[in-house]
Image (cartoon, rainbow, N blue to C red; front, top):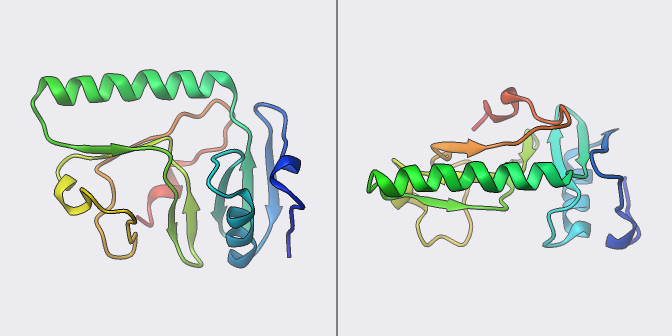
Length: 144
């Protein structure tokens, strides 16, 4: 089982991506050890965990593009729900952390919920994923 002694020891240089063979239980343990923070970013797929330490460019780009999306939605007077950070997981199959999730057509299905059950609730209508390190793969979102 993978173990991190403390959150302070989960330090990777900006832009670093670490790929480790792991089980779903390892992924859950790392998420729990990381706590409510969002760094390092964690992803689980096909028996491996990927850890990413985002670069400043990542956060700036995500913020800018999310603002463009919300401005367009507001201009169109479109109801929506948007949030970040968020962890999407399907037990034993996938765990990903997109930069932003937007519920547009299905905003009422998640509005006011404290937790989303990714096995039952609809997936986001739009996810924003900034990738400056080749960490992301569009195929990671297919199970949802």
